[in-house]
Image 1 (cartoon, one colour):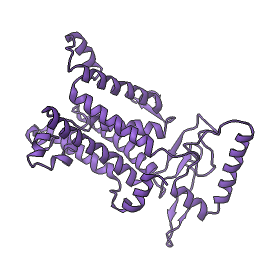
Image 2 (spheres, helix red, strand yellow):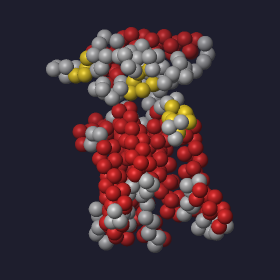
Image 3 (cartoon, one colour):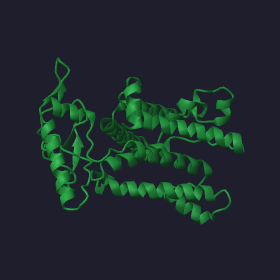
Length: 319
C-alpha cells in the first residue's frame, strides 16, 4: 500500500470535503477587496515572511485570498468557474483527502520557501497561489488528457495540449525569472514577455518552481498503478456481483498481452457501465457524473443514460 493511502486511512476523516468551494469563495472575497480599493487589507493578508516571523501567523493561510486574476468581473467569473470545475473533478477522482493534501502541500511549500529565502538571503518574496492553480490544471490534464476545452468558447483544445503550453509557460517563467538576477533584459523584450503574460522575476520563478515541485510530488504519489481501480469502484463491483467478472477480464487481458510478447497499456479511464477504457477507445471522452455518490466515470454513450449510484438504508452502493 502506498504511503499516501496509509495516510488517508489514518487521517482521511480530517479532510475538508468540497474544498474548492471555500477556495473559490476566498478568491471572490479577495477580488472584491481589490475591486473596491481595500488593497491595505489584502496587503495585511498576503504572504510576507518578515511579518510571519514577527508573529502575524494568519498570513500562512490568509494569502490564499489573493485573487487569481484582476481582470474585469466577467473574466473573473469564468476563471473562478474553471478552477472550481477542475478542483471538483480532481476531488472526485482522488478523494477529498488527496485533494486536500495536494492543495495544502502547495500552500505550505510556498510559505516554507518564502521563510527560508528570507532567512538566508534577506529577500522578502510576496508570492501568491497563481502558479499553484496552474498546477491544478496540469494535474487535471494528466487525469483527463482527452477531454476537450473550448478556448474563448470557440476553439476546441484537448487538455493535454493546453497542459503542454502551461508547462512551457511555467518553465520559461522559472528560467527567465532566475536569469533576471544577473541579466537585465532589453525593454522591448520585456514588452514581448508581458504581452505573453510572462513577468520574469525571482518571486514568480520561485512560485512557479514550487508549483511544479508540487505537481511532481503528485505524479509520484497519486498516479494509479497498472490496472488499479478506486476503492469506490471495487466496492460497487463487489456489491453488485461484478467483481469476479472484472478480475477475469483483467487476467485475460494481461495473459493475452504476455503471450503476444507485448506490454499491456494501463487504462486511466473506464466506463462504470460498459467497462470500455481509453485503451479500448483512445478517442473516447470520459466524464464523471456529479449526481452519482462516489467517483464514477462514464463514456459519452452512458454519461446521460446511466442510472445514478446512491447509498441505500444499509449504506451499500446501488443503482
